[in-house]
Length: 64
Image 1: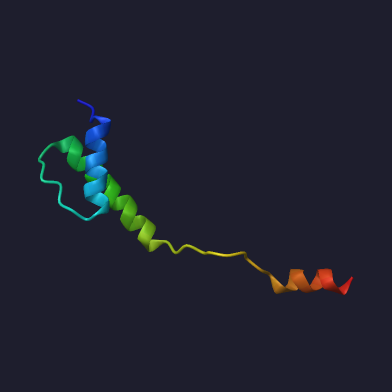
Image 2: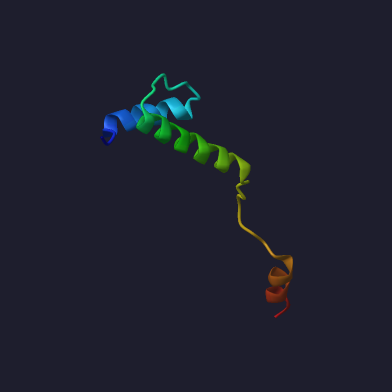
């Protein structure tokens, strides 16, 4: 049986707010664990913000 969108949303909220699921349903647990794993993976990868600037390229354009 597939999870309803309402139930998926409730599981998503529980996972993102670091709450326990409180269910023994295998489908719900699998979805909860999938979200938690994705969140952990996102925390491991750093996010680079801003504009990448290569000084060699910027100074070459000024010389002309």
